[in-house]
Amino acid sequence: MRHERSQRSNIDIEPEEAVAVNARFMLRTMISKPICLKNLMTVMRRINPSIMLVSEVEAKHNSPSFVNRFIESLFYYTALLDSIAEGMAQDNKNRMEIESVIYCEGIHSIVAAEGCERVTRNVPTSVWRAFFAMFGLVELELSTASAYQACLIVDLFNCGKSCTLDANIKCLFVGWKGTPLFSLSAWKFNGQRSKSSLSI
Image (cartoon, rainbow, N blue to C red; front, side, top):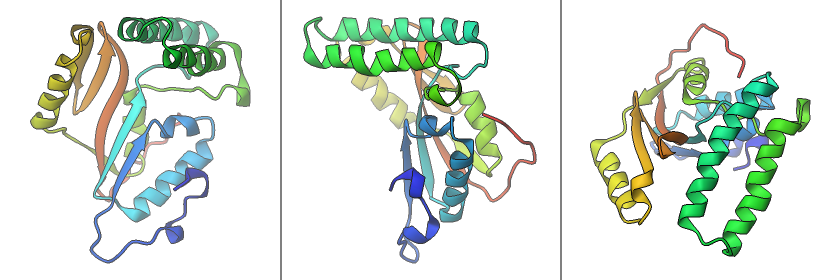
């Protein structure tokens, strides 16, 4: 389902059918289009999934201040590039593509673009929490078993000691040497909306 054309009528849901939504690094792409993001959340609220999993970049890259964005991106991408360097050989083709295309475009968008051209606008979990509250979403606690499994997977890698897994209220932060990089959280609509307004 493409989020640009998401409509409740386009989704065929059987009676008593359970629906789960996996928003994996997708909501961040709509921060520069707040109307589209709010429309998507309205559709999700009507669908009322049993659970919505959200994976996002854990960073403050949406500040109107260039200096703040520069400093945040410096720390974030330093940790990200260090993790790639420790886990992949320098001549690895996948590594070269990730660094020269994906990360390069992200850095350029954060520090060298303005207005509609600045498409990389990551925000921290605290901002998403306030935004989700506007649509009646309640954060669910991740199970102890899932956290334990995550630790087991990290321990399988030689560089696992550099990977940090930290609980933040009810969500999980995945980081590198203490710098948070990504977040994983679970949500459910409770039928009550927050009366506060928020601009992401």
